[in-house]
Image (cartoon, rainbow over all chains, first blue to last red):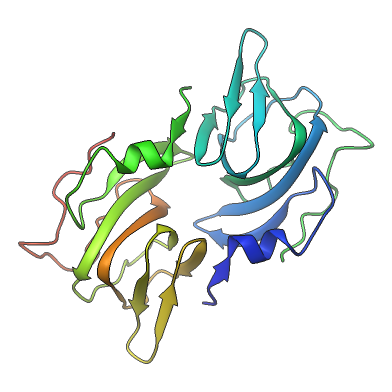
Length: 120
Length: 120
């Protein structure tokens, strides 16, 4: 039961698209990730996924529309919904989803799939 | 799939200790709550509970120590752990926990138990 600070946790890493676990509870995980560029299209078969922007701006693209998120904005992407995230400049994001959720969902991507999701 | 903004959501209510649901996913809920004063001692039998401070300062008291949280600080209180939250001045907090978790856990309190947890 150690408290942690989001700003301090974000300062611990600089790689993009590689989520880090900061808390685990009720079979869920809270992950931090830094985004820049464009992620591959994918969906999560059984997992809903919440994005909460901590710093910067990002967008979540769906096949028929795009949602723009800034600091304090949040969006739940329901299971089975194809999407991709993107950010023109680095964006710091909190993700809330079931433990073990693969970042690229149904696809495997040599560059983007996170083989490990370290706890920081 | 509507985005929402935490600052705007916090502006929608002013009562203390009455959680509002802003997102539901994976049988979990994300709730916002404004704290001021001191909550009753309680524990949640089966639910872990994460507190993330959005604005202000609060403390989470345990029987043998106290954790002080400011903006961006977070703490997971594991299931079965007796605790109470408190804030000298109003504090805005985000809570992650299983859907339907009662705010006062194992106790029922005329003043503090939230009989309904409205979605805002």
